[in-house]
Length: 196
Length: 170
Image (cartoon, rainbow over all chains, first blue to last red; front, side):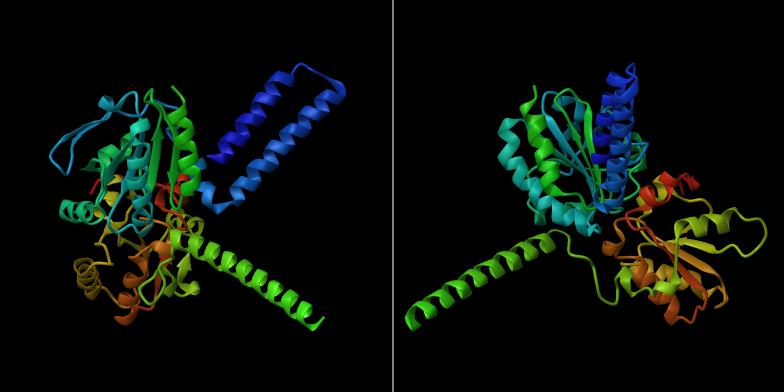
């Protein structure tokens, strides 16, 4: 995620300065170098490397899906248009998922009135395990069982946890894989909640 | 004079104690977020010498001739269906008794010198509940040539994103 941001900023600066020559051009080269160094620095940071893959669906429209939740109610992603959606792929065997989920519960309570909707997708092989966790963790947001097809729709969910932030217009704005920084997710979510 | 000295010392000790509390509390908080899985069943129980890196395994799989390992996925069935290393076989989640039993049943039919590579990639290495029990099971059965694929984050980031071959489905 931070790699993309750094690279994008570098590219924007480069385009605006491209026609210039002489010392200014050298300065542009310097900026490219700086962007490259920033990118390398971010790559060296294991926590954010995972969010910088080439096949991520970030800045694309979130693939539509309709599922029946563990509470037997329909979960239609399209119905949440106008809200910021935190889409969490998790499983009961995934320890980092269990660490994150209490925060998602707290965020749903705190930011729900501002337009946040958390949706959980369990990738457990056995729905009974997900149902057990649903009650044990007192999840206050809808959860459906996922499958390989849904994972494919979201660019391939080959490991957990994987979390997407979708803006009010239905566009994916961020993807976090592995041990994400929860503060970073919250800050991004707050920023999306402020946008209309 | 002496009283002043004692007061200053007390303040210094108090300040140091407060700083220590901040340090310990902050450290504990950061550790509380993602506590790595440790102990006999963790991925860390696999000896370093028995790990194989993704690029090394990929080279091995791409090479012509014999000497290719039997690749066993010992994690989630659903993730296996979505994508698994080409040619690998699903065994079962080794963190669960059923999965471990399936591994034992499968391995019982193999020669102890069989070259086997185990992998999971369900979640970050320091949280993987499967590869440790799977490796320990084969080791205790007397298998002498077992490696575990080291996937620091997951199969997507450490295998698929590098362009190495994945298959879908059962």
